[in-house]
Image 1: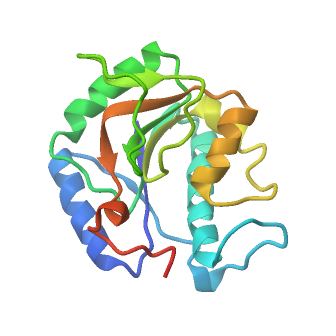
Image 2: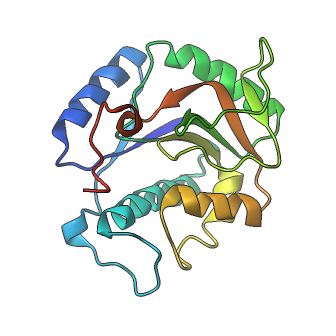
Length: 198
């Protein structure tokens, strides 16, 4: 398993918080910190609200390209507003086992807007349904198989990563899974202010 953290480097308190969490969880992530808004330009064809959304989009793209380049079979991608639990690694092992049993392509163990699986079965933690799209892009696992399909479209008329992934899940027939429990987004819960919408 490889871990990526998409980090907007001016937000130093977020990195301090996450470095502390990752140390406790024995995770050594790759920090993706490039593509700052003042270093990039919006492409002529795009559906972004602002340059900050495009910056985040390019960070996701970096992870996908790195997975392909290094033949990484599965990775977890965190955005820097994720709020991790102390029990994360315990649940991660359970999630990964059930995800593989379901032959999933992408698994959202992050959530927002109260999006939950249709079912709640005791002892079951990962759910698949053909209707499932993203729940938010701040915390998800993705397979190399899925990434190879996604990148075929990644630079064609791009938009916000979670909305673009919705399109890819439908277009490429990816098996999207949700977890119970799920990790909340710090912006959604009020822990952080948004760096995208300011």
